[in-house]
Length: 208
Image (cartoon, rainbow, N blue to C red; front, side, top):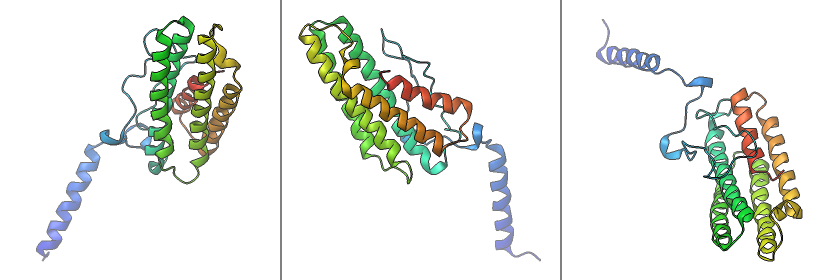
């Protein structure tokens, strides 16, 4: 005769099995982050009047190919990469147009990119991702310096595009290339969609 507690245990196990069968796994075998931890925006369109310099596609929600313990960090860092990229596009548009609105656009860029930079640096990187995070952060920091030069030059009557001539711009590009190399070495089994998206986020942030 079965004991009552054993019958209850068997019933719980059966119910748990039915629950997992009724909840299909997300594509790639990984689950998306809880909504309160997911920083990535639903809309990745560039700001009005701008366009990405390469074919940026949205980061797959379930981050296929990224281990569970590293998905939060990747989600947060790439969300900040996107924020810095959008801020860059808006300031470059203002630099191209010139005029009194440039001062306000530069201030907004400094605020938005500074927030992205601070959040990347405040994230606790999983072991092995510290260099990737620091390369991305340093690239944004160098771009801020390049834009400072460009705004001063534009205010002084120089044509648009001076940010490309700043030495910090090339140094930032090298940091982003290093970050991509670190991604490919750490995650050699990324799905094509994930690989394409992560690459083009870094490409869109780059000046070159």
